[in-house]
Image 1: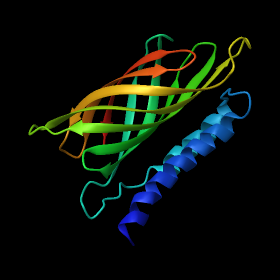
Image 2: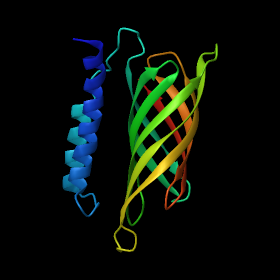
Image 3: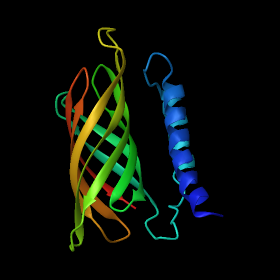
Image 4: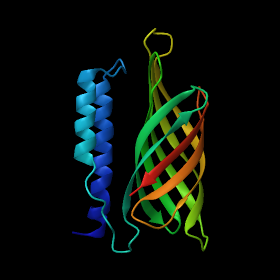
Amino acid sequence: MTTMKRAIRPAIRVLALVGVVVLSLGTTGAATNDHAATIEAAVIATTGPAVTTEAGSGVIYGIRGGAYADADEPFLGGELLTNVARSVWFNPNVEYAFVNHGNLWDVNFDFHYDFSMQRPYTVWAGAGPAVIRSHDISGRSNGTDVGVNLLAGIGSRKGEFRPFAQAKAVLSDDDEFVVAVGVRF
């Protein structure tokens, strides 16, 4: 199998997960217990072993959690990280915030640059487009928005499980500041 095919397979898994989540939430954007089983099955089906390219940079999976500061709500998410050029990484990710009267989730297509440091950790800065879906059960605030993420983070370079922390400003109709911690494996 070529290196390109090995790198694309996990990306297809993540896109399939995003598609299943979007379809399971339907037009209302409201998750139910029936939807939870569909989402859980999609997560299990898409979290196969990481694929390593010949160069060793590979495709890395991760989980993240944190808080949406303006919404004052916690979130959980999943991510994929793949090297696209020297020190440049593509980091698509999905986040679901646990809001009280509805739901808020986003799909992000972030890129970041790792600053070269001779340390066991790395520092990065980046940006990328975001698609934000919100649903308020009162019907006051429903819809899909697009935005731009501006982000910076720090994380471990080595080890089977690599912790990280990241701050992100989401510039959209409803700007948001997000703080996340996670682990990549």
